[in-house]
Each structure stands twice: as structure tokens, then as C-alpha cells.
Image (cartoon, rainbow, N blue to C red; front, side, top):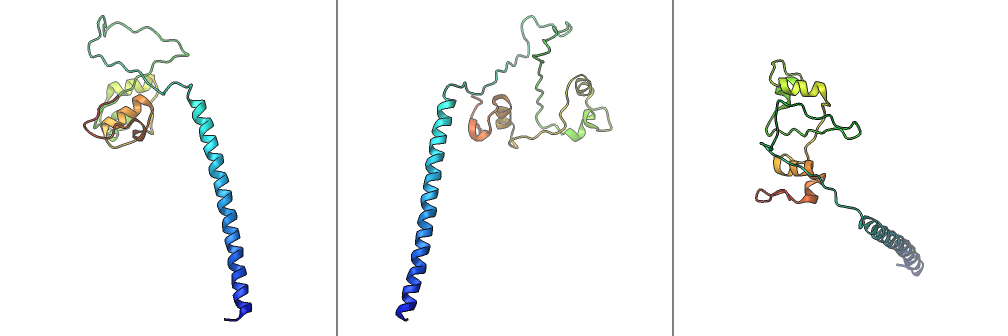
Length: 152
């Protein structure tokens, strides 16, 4: 190989090395900026309460009369009923268009309230899905992902 060719190749390699060094320096600056932003966000979140939901399940509440009408809530605080039935197919509910009257109560409830037509479960399993519904956290966050765990 001639000296001229060797010098030319060395110059090309040197140019490439300098370009890579510049890219690495830019990436390091980006990482430093992201680290600072992460620290700012973490500091801002320190004062916020954790996302929670309170739920009471009582099959026989004291003093409850199912025949007595419930008091009307304030319009700015609508009542919310979360109805969860395990292993129920929506395509077999008359409330969602099935031809036989399989869910007259749900039809009435949907007519008087809000019916959601598009729902997605965060998992295919009831326990982590319910934990997500009640906490607002995804399974990867709340950690209820194994059968021996309980909803915190």
C-alpha cells in the first residue's frame, strides 16, 4: 500500500472517529438532561398522594332496605356502580344485542345510566384485572400478578 493511500485511509478513519465522538458527546448531554428532568419530576411527585380507590363490598349492610329508594346524589358527584361478573360473555347478553332476553336487569340499568361498548382488560386474569380497576394502576405497577398474591 502506498504512503499516500495509507495517509488518506488514516484521515478517513480519523474523520469517522471524530464524528462518532461528537455523537457520543451529544448522547451523553441528552442523558444528563433526561436525568435532571427525571429528578425534577420525582421531586414534583413527592407531594402528591398515591392514586387510590376505596371500595366497600357488603352483602348485608346494616339498615339497608332493598325496597327503599336510595337518596338522590348531587349532580356534580354522580353515583358510580362498577359491575364485575367473572366469565361472562358480552355476546350472550341481551343488553348488548343478543336475541334472547338474557339480561333484563342489565338492559334496564344500561337504559337509565351509561353503557360502555368498548372495554379492554389489562390482563386475561380476574385478580390483576380487578386490582387494576380498583387502584387505577397497571399490573406491572401494583404487582398482583401471581395466584398467591392478594389485592393490597
